[in-house]
Length: 262
Image 1 (tube, one colour):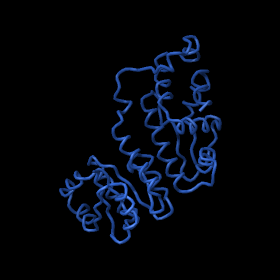
Image 2: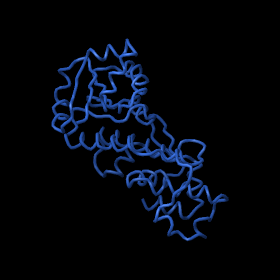
Image 3: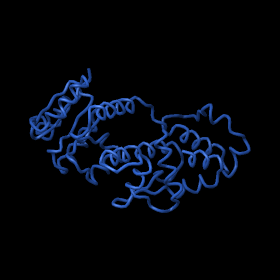
Image 4: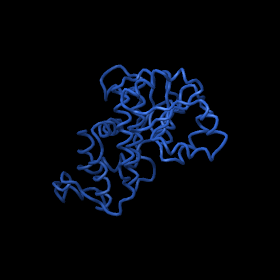
């Protein structure tokens, strides 16, 4: 059984989320005292080793979250922020910078919470691409004709790096990259991307999922030699593809086909 710690200023405010998590067979410990203890005594952070997840309640203000997150990041624990309704810009920034691992709310269903926690567990077990010292081509990549594979790039090894990443993008990750590719140098709003991905009214769950997905895309492209992040975040405006990545994809038929067909 996995253990979840909820840090809060009012344990009564956590009853609903606690019941949903317990229905998923998670052992939930809710504490207001540990919130103050962890902020005042760094040595008490060893207590967090007993938990796989920690949830920072919406009763905790942003300045306190900024104080807690660096401390929690020293522990092998997944950090989740719970909000009432609105996801703030700081929450989005923390999520994209991987200081937070997820954002949830009381409105999330048991199904949504189940998938969220399952994805966090899976991400924790994945090997980082940057730790590889070789390029492993998938079966799908190996079917590409050599003359097309090498077209447009001076260094074939660079091609392999980008092909490796593109073939490890999920369907949603590829669709987001495709949307940004077709926008060129223009900024695409978060709402526009969400609407194109889910084809329904945009809600906070979509926005949080988008932030998490964009973070995963950025992380995967760190295995390449891009100078900057694969996707640029313009706060209050939206996202734009890295101009260097845009140019590289547009100059190579294979890369362009893989992304545009996503």
